[in-house]
Amino acid sequence: MKKIISFSAVVGMFPLAAFAATQSLFNVLAIVNVILGTIIPILITLAVVYFIWGVIQYTVSNDEEAKKGARGKIINGLIGLFIILAFWGIVFMIQNTLGISNVQLQKTDIPCVPTPVNPC
View (cartoon, rainbow, N blue to C red):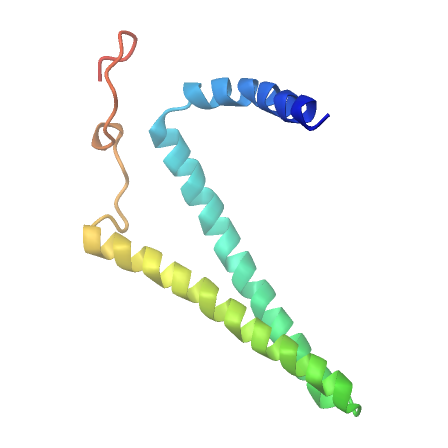
């Protein structure tokens, strides 16, 4: 049964692979840039809200067990915020090191494999 499900999943992904083959690398990089530009601020906002929620629970609760849970939320919110900001900072550092920050990629900047259809 597992083999049938695995085979069905692989065969079901063939149209997606064919669709991905028609996209150029330039289009894929542009889409990834837009997605990251949207997701990172949302993740930062969620981490800050989670941290503030933990602080509010910590200050309002009287029970030691509830304070312990709120303390865990505060720590997890800070760790999540640190990881998100560190990821964002590393990406910007790599962009600045390579000199590609605030530069629009041209289609000729991306290497391609010559084919009979696309001679590059």
